Amino acid sequence: MSHQHSQEIELKLILEPQQRAAVLQLCEQLAKGAEHDIFELNNAYFDTDDLRLREYDMGLRIRQRGEHLEQTIKLAGQVLGGMHQRPEYNRVIAQAVPDLTLFEEDIWPDDFPLFDIQRELKEIFRTNFTRHRWRIPQGDGMIELVFDEGEIIAAEHRQPICEIELEVQGADTAAAYKLARRFITRVNARVGTLSKAARGYLLAGKSVLEPYTHADFVSQQGQDDVGQGLYRALTYALQYWQHNDACLTQQPCVQAVAGITDGIRLSKVVLQQLALFEIDVSDHILRLEQMLGHLGWLSRFDGLNELIAEDGAYHRALKQNTKLYEHILEQQQHAVQLELVVNLSKRDDYQLTLFELGELCAQQPRHEQLMQTPLKQWAVQRLRDDWQLVAEPFTRAEEMRPEQYLKQLPQLQSSLQLGYCVGALFDQQDREQFRAPWLDMLRGIREILALKLLREAIKDTDDINTERLLSWQEVQLESLLYALERSRRSAIKQEPYWIL
Image (cartoon, rainbow, N blue to C red; front, side, top):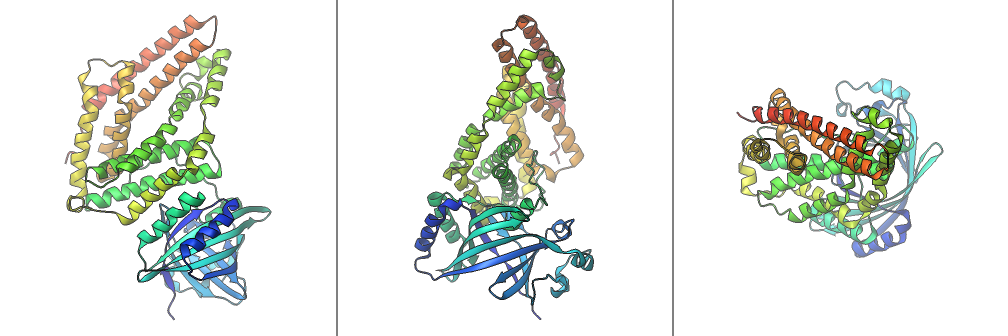
């Protein structure tokens, strides 16, 4: 009994339902006369009430096509730049009731409680859609182009399905990327991160999509070459960005924008490293910088938030000045430009950048030098050079004024992000100890920004206490500078964690 197992590489794009006619027309054009199949697919997804399958990152569905019933289990896999990869196993069944014991035993993890789960399975949601399929010959293989339209149904909730999938079968992936790019530029397709199933769980209220709010260290392997290490870091940065982008689409909020901003910054830092090896990414870096320009309002929002956050240092004092407090609150609401970011995320250049960076990770172009340099050796050298750049202005000055600190912010930020890319190669305790005062400085510099905004706000509110408030602001700034001075001295003295 052989079990059918396929590792698929597919690209997934999401469309607006009102584009349906244009999408079908484009598919026909691109398929160049390949035959067009149309069929109905009804899928029911099963799990236990407490989502035990989901805990193992598995998905179980029964698909009905005409009289034909088939159950499929998808095991854990990975998603990258719109590219989905996960192993799946199929079994033909006689009735629409799932039976896990029909799959081969050796596919399950060792600790998998098969019978307990089987007993408690129930339907969580279903996806019913019409599938249009074209098989486009390509070199020695085939690209399968699929357009699905229909809906996801979970109890009384419904959500439209309108998406393109391109599956590469023994063909060149570059050709599939080329086709996908057409959908982005001509019918406003977006890179899809969430599978139909993931959206079903969300609709059924069985999962939530939470923005990632801070990056982790990329888990690197010391014996890898620089190429492997940098593409792994880029993959992480992209997944971080895409996850937050999906959050923004689902439910626009400032946290999602902050996550997108971090993901873009992290991607940019990695691309800058790749550029040192003559990988041509200058267009990408330029596009990312333009995007960050649209996200600049976030630092103003954060600054104002620092002033009114309940656990912050200024909240209590400001709360006593109702007029000023309300002015700051209002300024903060004005600062938010979610609409702008939602529109940005729908633009071709934004989607193409996400998509092309995914393609870069999939193809991983390498020069000799990228393959011959061990990652750890390179990281030591790179962190040292970078740190000298960062530390120099902080070491040189006798005392630093607010403007000097603010000027160093971008450099310090990207330096700490470079640390996220390769820091995992070094001793954790040394690393944390080294980074702590620099992170304190980063927070302190952002607080300078907050106090600058406070000064503006005081001047904008015509209050009898203006003078008193201004001198209070100055006292706050002085004590912040004093704390920053201590962090600065401590930071310069730290023993770098990458010295071998």
